[in-house]
Image (cartoon, rainbow, N blue to C red; front, side, top):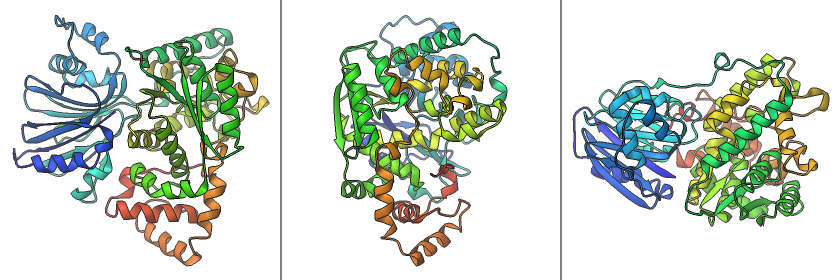
Length: 496
């Protein structure tokens, strides 16, 4: 969990130290310790909570996140390391010096990177799912980048999201290094289901193991009581007896009841927080400021995520079940598709939309309270295996359920009523949507809704879908009046 920023100019100006401080001052929630240093053509800096050595000789590395396969890559490229205490940033420098830009396609992890090599070239890179955020502004002579949009709002309207799975050198255009598409994942047919379940179980356990750091950290799970978060909690119990779980929802909501059942079954140290409408409503401005979006379903979930982040800040590492619905076809609309090909296309599209929907929501909510979140369901090795499993093992129309093979694995760890629980969106299961819609419906008049909608029509985004979203848009514009919305936002298609 860190926030990175930089200013790079072909004019080789050195008067930007104050500007780099301004960039970092807008994202102090991403880290308490700051380091700034000069680079050819400008300055770069980082806010971080980690002991991360950014300067390595003439090289510099800024990273938000972690790359898990550095030691493997050192062996792959024949790099001998004599210093057993070498840092991750040192390993990255060795790899860049030896392999150059080719190494970006080899990195596995969750990261946004800025690297300055010994020749003075600056590279930006982002993991292929976009689990860590990165934005940039550039013109013919200057590149400015930062972890969040709010840092770049003074640089005009043309701030862009840095594309997931891409890298950029100096002032060139971002180039794709890794992506998810239909051609990359030939589907397994006629494979034994039991073998698939065992392999899937193994990949899930390995994904958890990769994300558990040494040093006896306090480990927690955001527990909604749904399949994905419950399975993550159960898998974590395979590694430690001391697991903390955190849930939020209205009194009597399905999520709170299910989460309590899971906690009792697994024996976790459980904290639940009962929501109230006034608290949720008062959280809206802060949530939209951090989220940098006004998409109504995303804002609804962010409100709950903000509160669960606040109550879970005690844990050193939090595990989230994000990605399970996308990877295993868990959304109800998958049941409407008639062919395996269409289901697979839907899965690929859903995964490719995560970077500025669910992952953006979790990143901003967690960083607002200094929470370090891991996504075991989105491990690259796990993803590469699951996307090759025929959609017929995921979507069972005869049983009216998605995530079928994942539910089969979960049945080994959880009660059947949890493993086979119907899918609810977080804001539905927690009881958020009804309370907010009713309150905001009475706060925005028909004329105001029309006026706000007409304002939005001047951009290329869809027309606002209801008064709730219009209210969120009005708050958003107070914080981000000049940004081109189409450069940084996407919208939840399945609104309801």
